[in-house]
Amino acid sequence: MAAGQKDNSTLSLKVSLRRNLLREIEKPVVLESHGGYGAIYERCYAHLVAEGVVFEKDPAKAAVLGRQRPTWAVYEADCVGALAAGVGGHLAVSFFDLDPYGEPWPVVDAIFGSKRPWPERIAVVVNDGLRQNLRIAGGWKVASLEAMTARYGNRALHDHYLEICREMLAEKAAQAGYGLSRWAGYYCGYGQMMTHYAAVLVRNAARSSLM
Ligand SMILES: C[S@@+](CC[C@H](N)C(=O)[O-])C[C@H]1O[C@@H](n2cnc3c(N)ncnc32)[C@H](O)[C@@H]1O
Image 1 (cartoon, helix red, strand yellow):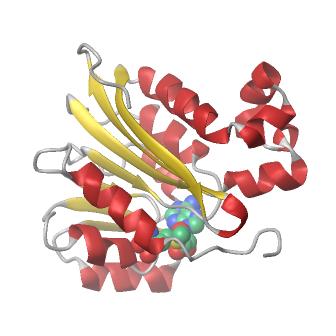
Image 2 (image 1 turned 60 degrees about the horizontal axis):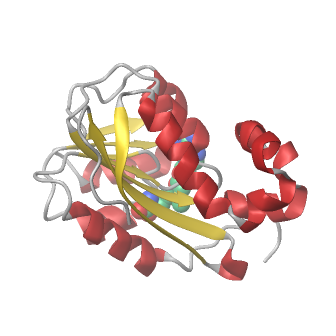
C-alpha cells in the first residue's frame, strides 16, 4: 500500500474493541471526532446511545450523519479546533472515539486541554495511523512525537509505538486529572501499520488493574 493511502481493512476489529470498551462505562455518552459516513455508529452506538456528539469536516458526510442520528449534536467542523474550544461540552461525554486516517495526537491534546464536563470515569478508543509515517519518515518528522523521539530514539518509536501510545495517552489525560485504569491495544491492518488502543481513565481515584 502506498504512503498516505487509506487502510479500511480493520472495521471489524474497530467494532469489537469499541463493543468491549462500551461495557466499561455505564450509560455512555459518546463523542466521535471523525464521523465519516457513520459505519462505526451503525455497528456500535445506534441502538445503545441516544445522546452524543459527532464531528466531520466533509460537508457531504456531515449531512449524512445529521440524517443518521437526529438526537445527536452533529457538527460539520474540524474536530481539533472545535474540541479545543469546548464544543460538545453541553454533554458530559464519557466515551471518546477517535478515528482519523492519520495521527490522533492533536485531537487528544484538544480534548484534554479543553474546558468541558469531566465525568469520574471515561473511555477513550483510538484508531491511530501514525505508524505508517514512522516507518517512512521516522519520528523526527512528526511534530506531535518530538518529545518521545528525544526520549526513546527514532527506532524505538516504530518498534514500540504501542507502548509509547500508552505512555503519551496517560501523560495527556493526567492534564485533566485522569489516571490510566485499563488499557488494551494491538497493531493491525496492512503491514501492521495501524495501531488500535483503548483506555479507561479514572479521575481523582485510585488506579485499579492495569492490563
Ligand atoms: C477513518 S474516517 C472515519 C470513519 C468513521 N469513524 C466511520 O465510522 O465510518 C476519517 C474521517 O475523518 C474526516 N476528517 C479528517 N480530518 C478531520 C478533522 N480534522 N475534523 C473532522 N473530521 C475529519 C474525514 O473526512 C473522514 O470522513
